[in-house]
Image 1 (spheres, helix red, strand yellow):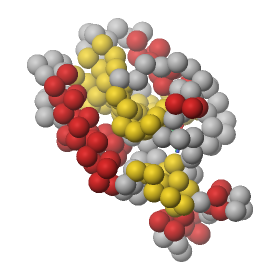
Image 2 (cartoon, helix red, strand yellow):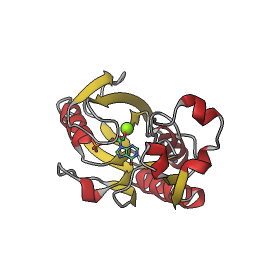
Image 3 (cartoon, rainbow, N blue to C red):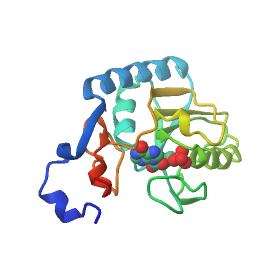
Length: 192
Ligand code: IMP
Ligand code: MG
């Protein structure tokens, strides 16, 4: 049996982590650097940051506070049909943008790019709305897993092909609140 919500109530989330891949201080430092780069890139320009729910919310919240220039934020939510830990490539829009992006500079904020299917679909959709520019920032990248070519403009950390949680990323909707990026113990998947 996979970990149930009840089991979660009786253990510490940290106990389920095999290894910390990126610690809190390292993440925070990297986010400051990325915020400074985006601030320099878009100084004096109109900018909209689009967070892809839910995994990117922690990154988004820290990133926008590291950005020193005026900008708007908005949110989209997508869902891929199929298995929970691998992307099927079929994407459904659960929540669309509230703002128009026509003629505007858009930066899509992602938690992780794995196969690239989700983002590839999203980029096609957003491009049809004629933004002035459309670029991508992701906290994490798993280049080994890429099935669709995508030009990613800013990457927080390139990581090996491991299933990770924390700092917004979940397994079965849990672990998003961990302040670091960690690899789950195999036993949590029911494999240990
Ligand atoms: P892609 O379409 O294969 O690039 O999948 C991207 C989405 O899969 C991400 O936005 C995450 O929701 C999820 N995902 C991929 N790898 C991981 C992981 O290691 N931990 C948590 N979620 C992941
Ligand atoms: Mg996600």
